[in-house]
Amino acid sequence: MTHGVDWPTESPLRVRARTTPDRIALHDPTDGRRLTYRELAAAVDERVQALSAHEGLSADRPRVGYLHAPTASFVTTLYALWELGWTAVGLHTELTDEELARNAAIADLDAVTVGKNQSGGDALSCPSLDAGSLAGAEKHEMQEPRARWGPDETALVLFTSGTTGRPKGSG
Image (cartoon, rainbow, N blue to C red):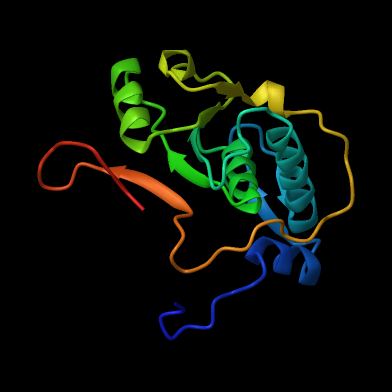
């Protein structure tokens, strides 16, 4: 069902990397680094390669939490999860271990990626992948998007407490 909308077939990042490759896409305030769309797409490709190499994440549309401060790593991980066709589940970096474990259970996570200098991934019952273990993949040319998303598939789950004060995932 398309809901009366022409559903996009190409990643917006890939469109920008192709049409405006040298424009600044991202400024990481933590280290001052600036990435062009071409560089961001290449960083996403590296993250895709690293994520897809991990065993146990081959389920159809796995749910993968990302526990990253708002840095370049946050952006590349989020886009990589989407490129793989995996559902990204946002986990707030200021949650306690107990709160992280609760949200991971609510979301039924298959794994979690953990950014540099973040803690909390060890408190979860699913596999935890630190940002360092996802770095260093061999560089290669930009590739076409790997996954196709339909309007009825969940790309992102965020938590809200709404009016009840109890966290619930909203996708």
